[in-house]
Image 1 (cartoon, rainbow, N blue to C red):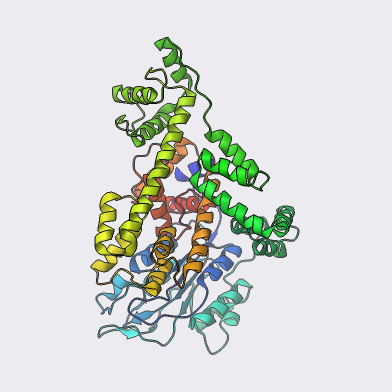
Image 2: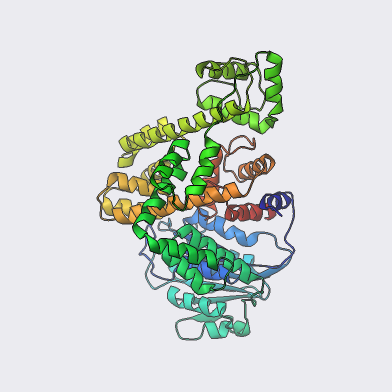
Length: 573
């Protein structure tokens, strides 16, 4: 069954018929008003839990609001709940009755403000209750102090876990080791043995919360490992895949790719850079340039296929009779979504066809006639197939040009981090490439946190943002900075990830009906995707990026299987 069909079925109300093991892993280390916390590798723990069959959400350095949102995944309805594991590493405050896990934005809270700047552990434990065979909460912290007002104390206070919930406390490193032992099949007593960790209640020591793996999971692990190797596309990634799955489904492909990489590493890097640029630009000229440089490259076949799709068929002269022109357009069977797409493309070309409502009224006909006249075609006010493709290609070129202008103005205005420059950028490009980064910097300045200045401050800010726009900002300010090589490497990785996501979405064959359903779910989640017309516009892409960031998913702006899983979780919540 195609993934689009699965998505459609789930979005209209299907519920899972199997027990789901859920996990949440959060590592808060970089606190605004408290010492940093050293500890476990959150991403490695999340990966290990996924490999053990858990549906896993993870987050790094979360402020209070996204922290609460991430923990909401535990509240999603589940008719047949499986095991529950939650690991929280960071700063905790408590009073006589409650302990709070604090967001990284916590600022000297008192008893009344603690709930707004953190999450109460009593709530977390209630959300975990009911797991089968049980639920384990792992809390990691150290002895350093977080500023607070009278009435609160640092650390983890007295906890009263509900039935079926066990709590392990100690340093983050020890908690990580305990979790690794649990994933290896140890009981809680075995995993928490030693003076560094405490287990509550002690009667839970015989609990073994990680169920045995199903035989079918091995195939899923194989596919996931191959997907990670293919996205990284490095010799190390393919060797790691073969070490885990020497007889795997994709073992032959991995060995072939390793041989290609080994033959010409210098050429490979140049080829990959040229292909990434062509795929990101996605124009006929870009693919032609790639083929000129690498006519026998590993991506030559894909480049030729895409080039054939982008180059329009030379337009035939429209029939002289208006009735024939009308019939030719009707034969295209554009449908409302296709007509709305044409209207949006005409608007991008400055031809004012009216609202993108999928109806070719008088204004749209005038716009089509104007476009035909400007391109030296017979003016009929009706479109042929080649003309629809020409309009789309011209609009795409205009969008690429607009993106280049957007980036150029950002370099002139907002890239310096000056508040006036940031506002000037947002005035011109309120939905621009760097608009979200500009708003975040202005919001930080408005709350007494200056926008980052200096190499180190800007680098720390870019790492916290973790977006391509943030690393571009760092490189624009400090092209020869201390962290410039690392920033370029991270930026290349992010761009490669976006390109992989674009190809993944293309492979899903999403129908207009499925796209409209996704747009409706994004609107229901408060992400403002624009009209649900069955075609993903820049507004839709921005909404997807906001959704992915809010759910701690890989931020690409494209519909991936990971994003679909999040949408399914929201529907079933």
